[in-house]
Image (cartoon, rainbow, N blue to C red; front, side, top):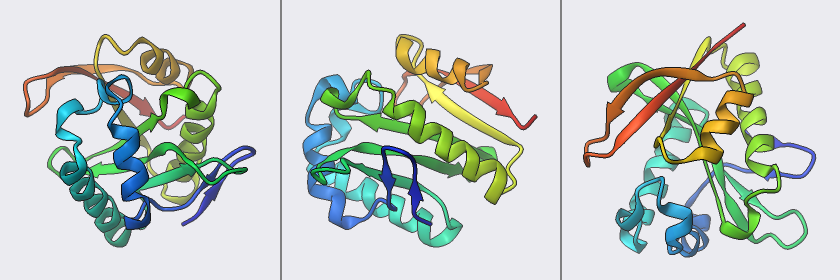
Length: 166
């Protein structure tokens, strides 16, 4: 499934994006809320393989966010299933220079449309660290509410936001 919005092309994230994603993840200001040091070249390659597998298995997943003019990867956004908790999570990450331009909201809204219209999902989650104020504000604007507190396997406290279909 290839998504497209007014400003964004959103092809499925694949191995062709690994190098650019590795560069994006090299910036600690970008990754501080999504895994930090675990996202080195090897960790990024493994993550991209998992993302590809999700697309193959589920028919949805993380999409690349290339700049329409230059093709440079601005980040990624999409849906990710967590079978152990029977949840589907909305997630996104943007390069530092792409933040603050409304791109995360645009990509997230496209993902929400896919989730409700094409996939018929009546519930989504967004896992956000409490100190990630921009993401918390965006999820609130998108209709998410705090559902529970949790701790990641690496010991990081997070807030799990939930959005129910209206």
